[in-house]
Length: 299
Image 1 (cartoon, rainbow, N blue to C red):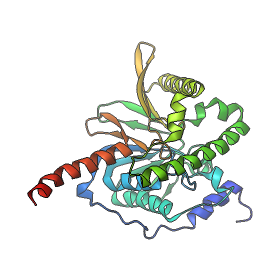
Image 2: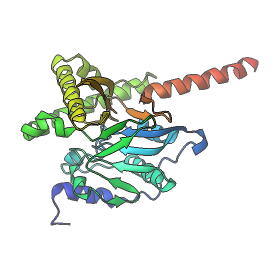
Image 3: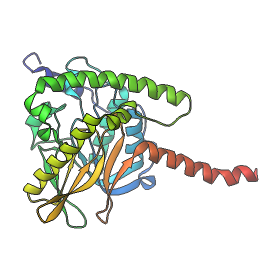
């Protein structure tokens, strides 16, 4: 392993953890899960303390689909090559994804910039997981979508890679603060809330960057003759249409599992929806409480 680059060494270290049995067992049967035609998730950042493994495990235990796209930054090679961090919960996520592939779900993994060490394996299949540089998806209502991570359109990544690494270090410092805030709110019985996500939506420059990024990605999709694009990268879930020529191009961003904890899903009629999982958990708990109320009153 001494001849491997730091990125590939980190990936090899992760690969040596064979997910034979999860620490947290699956909590629901297949019949109890919400089924979708397609699920897109990205920016999980396994190998970092910022990864919200608890919420993602809950999501994977309560949903299922015919196809799942892993839209990049699933493993954070940037952080792993600096300091190896891989708790059991991260193994549980890998186990659940491989379990889906074993059950027949088509899994397509499109590496991003943080897991770029996987990109040389594009075109290969590992454990039922297809690795691709990009993909095209046909929706149930006949639209063709381009699927890619999206760092290809990030001007900071393209022109100033060193600045991207500096920003990454600052971002992870913010995520440590975010983790402390989340822990305190949990102890107080308050729902999950992301300080970094709230800050991002209030800072003018960040809002301008996100808006410009979305426009550039949508225009690139239109130039390639597709009806829409699905990406990740900027940790901001969104669904919107952009004008292109005489028509429109749909832009979808599935968000992340560090700040927002969101997924993009396609229903069986082709309808697209963004699921904000903390809200879905709150809704589920409220429904359970409402169902239990009559029984408690009768007692």
